[in-house]
Image 1: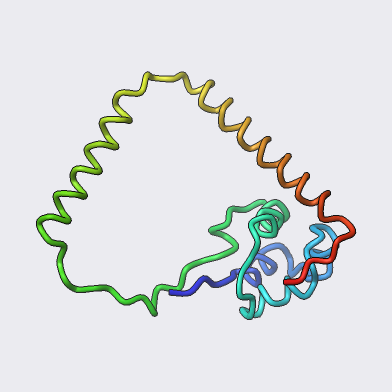
Image 2: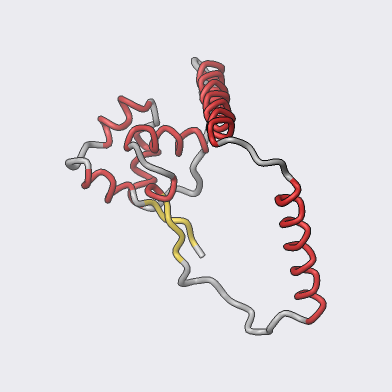
Length: 137
């Protein structure tokens, strides 16, 4: 299984925007963008992924995908004990979820938005703490 980039497809769907334009707007290193596009990148930092998602107004699933061709599946069916443990784990999770008090949708969305804001602030702090520093990839 390999993680692959769909940056070329995203660029094409946005009018074949240039790598230079993406780098200028996002602050992502031009070489890193090229490596992501041509498939030679070994990894992608979460903040880089977030910047690309923000730029293209998309989700990580639109930037990256999994190539399943190379995955090996063990054909051995799970044992009775493994199935029992899985059922026990699922039952515990459902019991915990069922025991939680109901919450209004507004409260859930408020918590979600607060989390998004907190992550955004952390990204900004991370960016500002790296200004002027050279980071080797």
